Length: 324
Image (tube, rainbow, N blue to C red):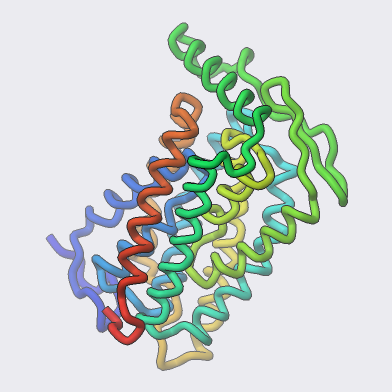
């Protein structure tokens, strides 16, 4: 049974009500393990399958983030794996960048064909960054790898022993230093530090690209934090999702406020479609966050890498004037 009017006029008139939440669940279950909401893969589905190509697809994607992410964030907080210092740096940097990117999308990239090329380049970067991390090390330190392997072994051993929900023997995050120049935290007996201005600058630039594409920034931030800054993926996922949630909420409000300024263009999010995607994503992200500690980080990265590269190849093969 189809649901009429779930996407704007001129795109797809019918889509079964169960399809958006099912697709969102399948995508977000795996991507949440890497600190990514799945919006960077959900947008290609909307563009290529649903034919949703107006700027409203970006704002709808941001709405998906707002509905879907809270369950995963709560799970990481509950397990003591939210690096609050890193999360606040990401939020402060990403927020203005996403708002700037949202304006760029509406003002300079309303054409579907041009936007597809931009989306292909973003996906190519994300997939390429992950491939470099997997094949050449990509800056992953031995310390981070040892901490990840140690945490994975302890989590699995505890599960096999019937440890339940309590986690007295699993490492929690302890922030050692939070300053203007550098920040440090402890995880699984190892101390990791990063440049506060460096992550702040990266967050700002990632926010601009993410806002233009229609994601919250986690898909860009997470690979960089792991490969360039050498942080364990088990500690990056929570902060990346929280930053995506805050930035996406601001972006949805901003898109809605811009809508009257562009009367001939679909800018506001499709609330029904975004909510359906979000409900599926809410369940998927929560489940992915809960099971992340049992899944090898390398397997998570390979999945995201291959999907992103395949989509990039598809989009960059479309001529800007095709519009389809």
